[in-house]
Length: 288
Image 1: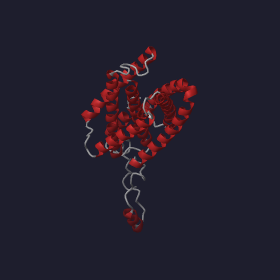
Image 2: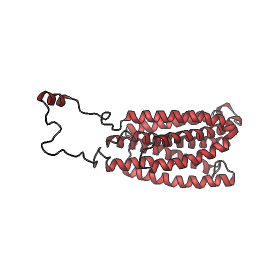
Image 3: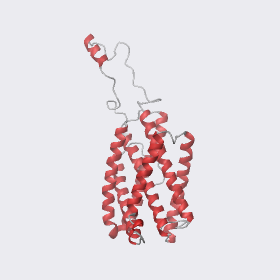
Image 4: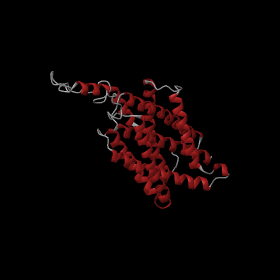
């Protein structure tokens, strides 16, 4: 969940040019001389055609920011609905839901990222399993830490993690839009390499946590563990900036509207990763 190959794929295609759109795209075949589409039209018809406004992104079915926003909102709503179901079922089927969620997320994530065509059913299915997984994890954290909180200030760990995630998202969007954070080729390469490295570490850490019965994995609740969580939150935040830039680049390149599903999916993947890392950091701090 730490990596986001969806945006890497879209960004690569935007630089190469989408078929029929942007630079390097396939050109529409030209009709032979004397057989132009306007042949046989009257002068009035030609004038009416000339006076028509140029086709915009909606008419040409190119990607717009509204497409990304609407798809993101829809997938987010699906994820929240199934997160509520996961929360309700967690006390009884927590371990089963956690295991199924991990396997489904990893499997579907790889298929979606490397599938040559955009599959909306797979993306929706990912949101479903991601919601079940997030709801199960959140309920476990909320039940354990709120019940054992020494003071009221330490209660509501899930709400605090959600609020912190929204604040980070808003802050990174503001920093990106105002130019405080500039996403360059070098920035993208560094973040991508760091994400790949952290993804490998996360897999090793998951195995260690299961074998050693250590919920937080390597570092536990020590300062090392807190440092790992802070690094992961910073990396996920940087990935948000890369995601924003990838969306802008895809729109500027004239990507097909269907890519809005992939862009929305990728953005939610990063947001969920950020939320889980913040939740883990809060859990570590409350365990000290």
